[in-house]
Amino acid sequence: MILVFLGPPGSGKGTQAKRFSADKRIPQLSTGDMLRKAIASGTELGKSAQEFMSKGSLVPDEVVIGLIRERIAESDCQSGFILDGFPRTIPQAQALDALLRGEGLQVQAAVLFEIADRVLVSRLTGRRTCLKCGAMYHVETMRPRKPDVCDQCSSQLVQREDDREDVILKRLAVYHDQTSPLENYYREKGILEPLDATQTPDTVYTSLRRLLSSG
Ligand code: AP5
Picture 1 (spheres, rainbow, N blue to C red):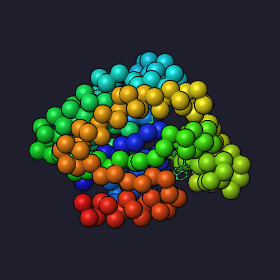
Picture 2: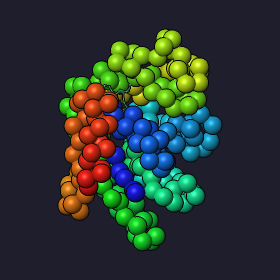
Picture 3: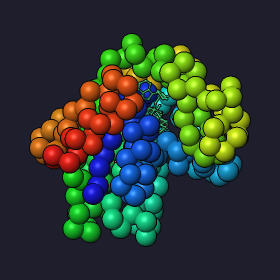
Picture 4: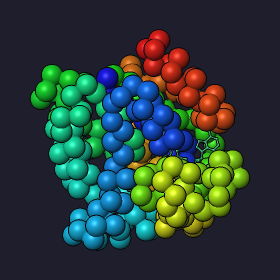
């Protein structure tokens, strides 16, 4: 099972990918998480990625394609994986297809998380993330039991550097300009699966399960 989760920043790709990954026991591959890990480790790749991410721009294609190429070769990806936030440009999608073709594989479905931009700004400004275990919260809709402390590993929650309103607006513009052409790319292949991402996380998850079991 090879799935692409496609949608604007804050549409809930990460939230749903984590849950689906745990249910199906296939890994969630988030290029955003991989890049943030590289930044936290202070690697050269991380330093150069930070310049793009802090402004809300995309990291160059060759960098993220390299990360994904290495990651999908790992043994835990043998039964499938969920791509969360990759591909984000047509060249990334073409590179992914070529990589998979080489192994006799292909993307099974590209799930499009559909939601209006105006909802996304408040979702993202209110997001709090655990840098240690990756759990996600929202200051209004998904509060941790203790303010700013992760329920799962008791680490401090943080606000992502790119979750400031000015950067969010730039990320949304980048999505519409550079990533939304992928909707047609996958539609033409007959594997685009639109999902109403405006509902509660539980309702979205039920729809996602239904959509992927019928697809
Ligand atoms: P990345 O980390 O991938 O961020 P993103 O795509 O902008 O997506 P987000 O993580 O912001 O949102 P999401 O859709 O996962 O929503 P979430 O579930 O967290 O990328 C960051 C940066 O890295 C990019 O800007 C770029 O610079 C770089 N990058 C990454 N991949 C790249 C690539 N392939 N190519 C080039 N550059 C790349 O939910 C958001 C909030 O809403 C949370 O607080 C959550 O609790 C809440 N929420 C979720 N679902 C619901 C719901 N149904 N109702 C109410 N609230 C909800």
